[in-house]
Length: 293
Ligand SMILES: Nc1ncnc2c1ncn2[C@@H]1O[C@H](COP(=O)(O)OP(=O)(O)OP(=O)(O)O)[C@@H](O)[C@H]1O
Ligand SMILES: [Mg+2]
Figure 1 (cartoon, rainbow, N blue to C red):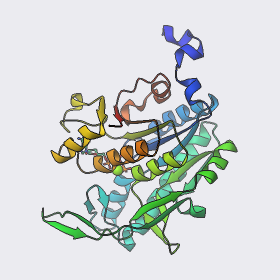
Figure 2 (cartoon, rainbow, N blue to C red; figure 1 turned 90 degrees about the vertical axis):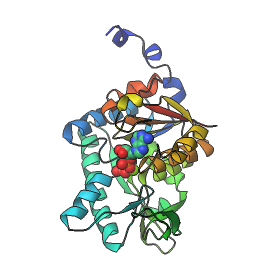
Figure 3 (tube, rainbow, N blue to C red; figure 1 turned 60 degrees about the vertical axis):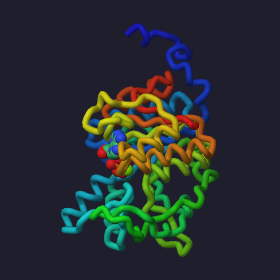
Figure 4 (spheres, rainbow, N blue to C red; figure 1 turned 90 degrees about the horizontal axis):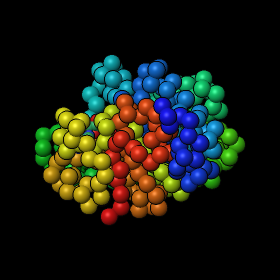
């Protein structure tokens, strides 16, 4: 309680460092869901903005897309944490992501923030090339070449356009459907998209909010949380099969962001995203910090 009365500088030691800086916050479908989660999150984002930070939001929608596919009798398939995306899956992904996006924008507006939904393909914001087939273990456990379909590798992100949106006082809320060389739409993993966006904006900080508290050594035990880890140690955990599935694109996103000059990357559980603002500004995250090296 006492902390509430401290001067703002003492309360938030990182404020000066982060003020006027873009900060990319990505959250997944299971991490922040339901109206109360969304309301709390929107309030935090509004506060960030009023303190002079420039939040840029990126969201996925994995669980909702899978649910919608099930409803339509289609089996969802993923390889190495990436969704195999045929034409029908892409159509469903776009439909679901657009719906989620509108809910987020509405929640932000409800919190008094001027927000704008941005599909990644809009005005070439996220340009991609079609992903080459990848060598991976299929569902039967055999190593084979797998074509992921309408999935993109990010080639570039238009940071200037994004900067113009934030400079006009709005918060962009981006969903990761990119534009390919032919002007078509491709599915991009939301963590990967967030990393490219953070790099294009030369962000100080990228935060990935997910449905687990961070990297766990035992996926069934949230007490096994790793508070800080280097990329070298992450590689060992991938080799050991400890980091797998949707966690792989997440750690790779952190690697990419760090390599491209983003200063700091964190993972945080949706449940721990309470007081997200304080966690960012006092630098004491409850999740996993991933560092270069
Ligand atoms: N070592 C690990 N520690 C924690 N989670 C792990 C680990 N290995 C694999 N995972 C899985 O990674 C998942 C998080 O990635 P996932 O892609 O499912 O969510 P998201 O990226 O937050 O959402 P979306 O894909 O919708 O954007 C966890 O729910 C967990 O099942
Ligand atoms: Mg994911």
